[in-house]
Image (cartoon, rainbow, N blue to C red; front, top):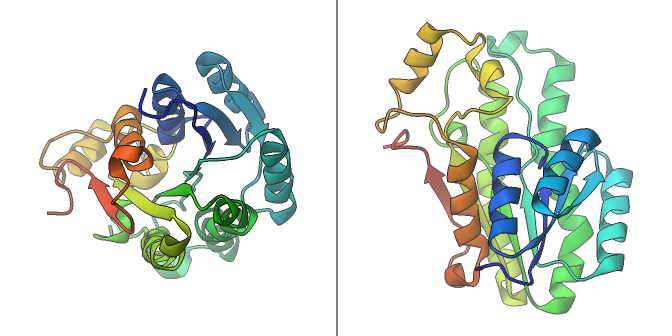
Length: 245
C-alpha cells in the first residue's frame, strides 16, 4: 500500500502502459482517475480498478481545464502521470506529413505544458506533488525513421529535468520513465508492420530479450511516485532491458 490515500491522474490510462500504471497504483492504495480520449477504454480500466473514468483530449486546453476543474473540485491531487502519447508511422523524416507532425508534438509535448499549467498551481499551494512523464528510449537512443517521435520524447526528457529544477523549492518532484517498445497499441506503429521478422529485429536490440510490459511501467512508476523516492527528482529512468547501454 505504498500509495495509500493518494489521488492520481493517469492520462492515456485506457490501454497499454497507462493501464498498467493505473492498475499498479490502485493495487498500492491510490484512487486513480483514468483519463483517456477513448472514454469507453477509460471506463473499462476504471471499473476494473475501482477508479474514475474521465474523457480528455490532452492536446486541447479547454478539455484539460475541464479535467482539472472536475478533479480538484472533488479532492486534492497528489500525482499526475503524463502517459498519453502517439507516434507517426516509420518514414523518412522529410516524408512525415505536417498533420502527423502536429499530432505528435501536440499529444507528446503540448499536453505536458497544458497539464502542468492546470495542476502545478495546485501543487504549489499544497507544497507537495509528484509529476511523472512517460518518455521513451527513443529520446536517448533514436531509431531511424521515427525522427519526430524521437524528438518529442527527447523534449519530454529535457522538460522533465527543467521542471524538476524549477519546482523543487515548492516541494514538487518531477521524474520520467523511458520504456522501450512494448506490447501496447503503439507497437505496430513503431515497427511499421507486426511480423515475426520485425519483432525479432526489434528484440535483437534489447539485451534482456523482451519488450517492456505495462506491468514493468507500473512498477517503476509506483516507486518514483511513492514516498520511497522522496529524494529523487529530475531522473529519466530507463526501463528498457538494457536497450540504451
